[in-house]
Length: 120
Image (cartoon, rainbow, N blue to C red; front, side, top):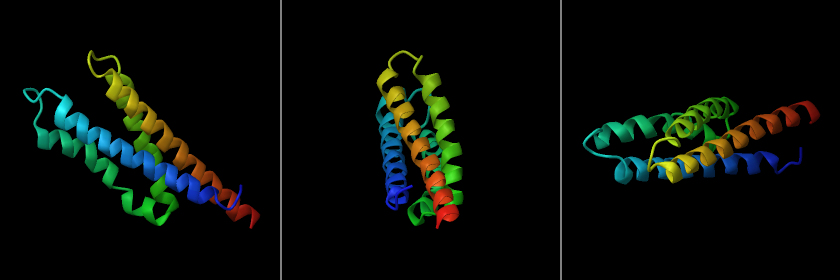
């Protein structure tokens, strides 16, 4: 891998994480029927998992990227289930896209770290 690969995949992961956080904030604040869910509860459930590995992602810690990869799969599964709900198509599709790009970023980062350890 090229030397800039770590930075590229870290930035891809962080951009995906920011996009996912922004999307989930907007989705849970404005697009969900408030009669069924409380705003605080929805935001906590949606955003707390994203905040867990954030410090490690910013610092480039490999274990944080592994955790982020696993969490991105959960958001992917949520997006896939929500895409079949009426009215949530765009938000669910964006959630799928952000979670997939986050997964690609995290796995690419792990691959780049492994390549840098074995080749130099």
